[in-house]
Amino acid sequence: MGLVTLTGNAARQTRQDRHPGQAWHDQRVRKDEGAATTSAELRAHNLARLLRAVHGGGGQLTRAELTRQLSLARGTATVLVRELAGRQLIEELASPADAPADIKVPRTRGRPTGVPSAHPQGPVALAVDLRDDSFTVAAFELTGRCTVLDHQEREAGSGTGVLADVAARLKIRRHQFGGRVVGTGVAVPSPVSAGQMVQPTLADWQDVDVAAILGGAIGDGAEEPVLAGNDATLAGLAEARRGVLRGVSVALHLHVATGIGGVLLSGGLPVTGAHGSAGEFGHMPLTGGSEPCRCGSVGCWELDAGARGLLRAVGQPEEGDRMLHAEQVIAAAGTDPGCAQALARAAEALGRGIGALVNAQDPEAVGLSGLAAEIYQAAPAAVRAGYLATLMRFRRSEPPALLPSTLGELGALTGASELVFDAFLTPRGLLAWPVPEQKTA
Ligand SMILES: [Zn+2]
Image (cartoon, rainbow, N blue to C red; front, side):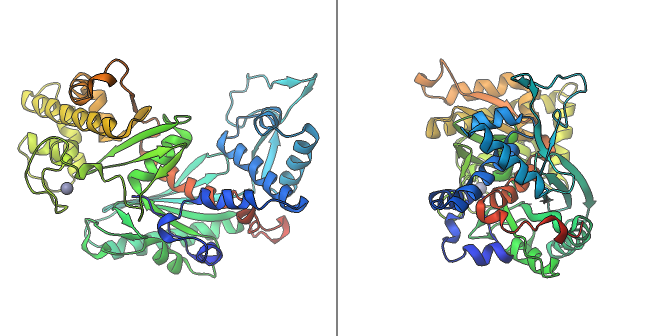
């Protein structure tokens, strides 16, 4: 579901050597690494590796720990850190920026070892969580620290209007952060195929390439890339990088809102299909129904699980803010028997679908975000009953853990920022980072 589209400079650099359907950044990373033969290339390669490790570690790892993790010589690491600091990409602190004041910095051979962290003038990824009726803009520093900048609610209806408002906010924020902005990531509420929203809920978003439109609208000769991906895919990517699926070798993530999306992640990388539109798990007949679905298929899982399942189970019309109404059903389940029954049904349906997907994909763990996490936390026994009922027998002694998201509402935004840093933290991406005196902020 999460195909990535590039505009601007990065697109010009990479369009020739990448098929749009195979556009996962790490292919470019591997390519860059494979080409490191001269000493200058090796140095660029090591600078990018070190920066990626600082990013991946969230600014919590000491220089000594990073040196060990990357198998660098101590002297090499010192030189690299000095260069990155000189280019204002990192700043070495005495202790992690987010650590409580009483935490002692580990020492090596009697000397303190600094903690490479985000530079106050360092790179910033802008991220947008685009919804049918609202949007959020945030800024992410190198170490993943997030500042929500804008949140705007809108009347659902005009997709073009939402995009115009997003572009206006992005222009202001790009001006504010100046040369520090290394790209913009956008999480979109639609399956994405070959860069376009292919089945959005808003009619005027049909076949729209959000990255191209926002890239053009931001204008100002912007060279940094605008990248877009499906929101559920990006929520899963975020969990693999900074949430409950971190370090999980093969993970399934399910993000439930009005529909059910998600992604399979292998080694932290999303498996997004030939065109980028894999992971539409809500549109699989996992619970045995046969009614027609809005998507064109029949018997879809989302008719029984998620917001649609909950509302159908209490006999409420599927209109207005379905997420809000679904959350009201969950909240009322403690006192209203009808809502309790609806929650139990939707929870069991959620579990049954998860069991079927685990049978198919054999993940080590399953991440749950959005309404999936809320349903699981409100009715864990019903979800587990459905899950165990559909798991094949040999899997039941050790079923993959169900892990509610720790990132919550920030999941899709965080994933969008990871798209940007994946593109930036490569030898080629770093070439775009200006020397300090050229930056405007
Ligand atoms: Zn469907």
